[in-house]
Image (cartoon, rainbow, N blue to C red; front, side, top):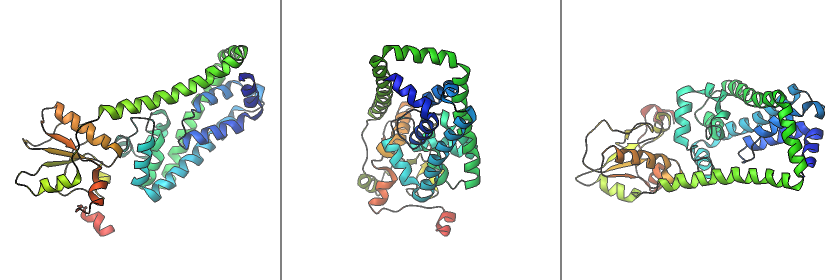
Length: 313
């Protein structure tokens, strides 16, 4: 089995690398980096050059990334929320990715593929926040070249060690193929388990949008905390909400009342993270808003927008 796979790589290495990188960058949990290392080590026996290998890898990554970029420009936050919901990486929630991208901008794309959780939605976020096409393509090409080039270089540099490892797998026959399949299964299972534990750790009581609306009309209204980025908040927020960055854990006000935290990502991940930290820092009554801003808007309640945003729309 392993020997057949190696023959395929030697005969159709460039094609395999192209589709592997394309599929992985499109979001499938099929790691391409090990394949790039192996094809880099086998380039001489496969009859293809390292430059050709690098070129098809960059091309596959760019096609997938540009597709996500265009989708981000068209669908914006809805697509980000969907990716956050189905992602196997617990650290790929929208708010955390925003904090990286909004700080460094398009140049962050140069290292995006090396950051777990960030790479999967960086291209979508670039389209969502309106990054210029020229800037996106420039930095994404640089990032794809660095990422794939490092793998190809490692394969070429340690080609003898890679050959020895492959010979061992070939010698194991069917058992070697089973080990490869098992390694892929363990990789996917580990990602799923990390996400499962992450979501479970954020289990806590939520407040519904109807309950929050009633609380705002009471004599003791709660403090509402928005943990989304400033860019997203400008498009709409719950009236009276104050801002608290995801990395912070304290509010610049004193209150003995209830605090309601909201975001716009599935499972209220960011809101639950901040709620936990606020509870740990001494606030006694903190709950995330179930469904976040999307549920608030769906219920027909008012949303406050910046004047510049309102006039533009």
